[in-house]
Image (cartoon, rainbow over all chains, first blue to last red; front, side, top):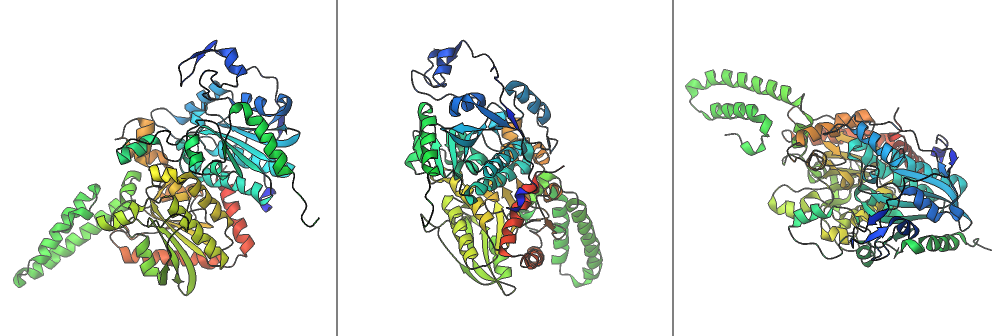
Length: 287
Length: 320
């Protein structure tokens, strides 16, 4: 465990009672088109009360929903080199980062917090899909490495809630390397016999699915979440045929043996606590 | 006539010169031969100069074309030239055999090694058989199995990376392409034997890194390694499939770029004119460089080899 030594310990900062951006008065369900009153939607954890569709849940709401008494402390966001490639397409990457930060009020697409669930200390990391499609670059990779590190130091489990389009193209090869680095992060948990639970939400694709997302000791998916390696459009273009119904949805993955269970958002906290109770209740060998 | 198919678009002037040289050479009038020899020597000098001018200044997009050249030595060529008594091993022992990944045991300069390489094939029949070098989950699970086997018997691993990417298709998704790649990446980190990855042509995204969480990452001079193909990047970020040249430049996907980022440990020089022109020479030189790194890594203890790999990757993007 030598690499622990040169690791920069993230500082904790207590989550202030933050006001979220005010919820829209009315929201439209993207699946059944029903108009839902904003407060009702929030109370229902952003699950459509009509069709059960799981809409995107922002990190703060996810933390409040999972931690005991809605109490938690943020792990400080890691410092990484910004825009390492000096990348420009039709717009420059720095300005994309800037507007994503203004929009989400987060530094990048991953944020982690420490708190308790059912009395167990636990680190939860959440990907922010609203931040450049939740894509994984240096900041996300390093954030996950440090979150894992923090969990190992405190000897607590790690839960990662994924939502990502894949690698952050604008960071080139360095974003690809995060697939290896986040896998290493997971390996530290495994080496220390600490549980790592992956919660896959809509959508979890590309380089994120092909690294830490698919390496959970237990893998949970939210209903109907898109979970894929290759994009459906690419596959369709390649094979020039229609795709099977429900292709790359959580239920399809479960049927093919790729996720352990599909858990509705309403039951997620309770199911996770039961799992933590089970995985934490180990016997001592030889006694 | 020179075979036009082996010349890339930007090599048109070289093609013209080569054609002329061959025409002169095929002229068998003895009386004229003496004059021709002088002319031929001149033209050959010119070709050499053109090759030098072209190949010392390849643009990123030109490198993409060279890296994908059909005549470039593939995994099988490296195995045939460098490995003695090669014993190919097949199957993931779970679902099937995927020939997009060739692998097996053999002797490299007398040392037993496990070679695991992506193979694109060289003609239509072999390309189909090798799945165009795009592995399916069973391919990655086979690679993982071979890594475990090598580790179990304390045998060093050499991986040869050459893929446009992992196979995108229904079967791949159905059988867990994402999980197969993730597990292969993880397996690499578990190895307590020397593990060297060589990008010999195209290092296409997740499909490539699955075979490249190694102690040493080497790249051929005109190979590429990228998070996404220039075509994919152009269509997503520029919304214009023809922006491939811009995308290739923006992605910083050349061996030289990656060496600067500290992702790649050493660039393996190619003869002037590229690996596809001088296949034997390229493979032999690559063998020498791989051997040098293997000799160095053999000095590390099993635990240190795993630690070396972890530290290498953890340091990788903590660049100042």
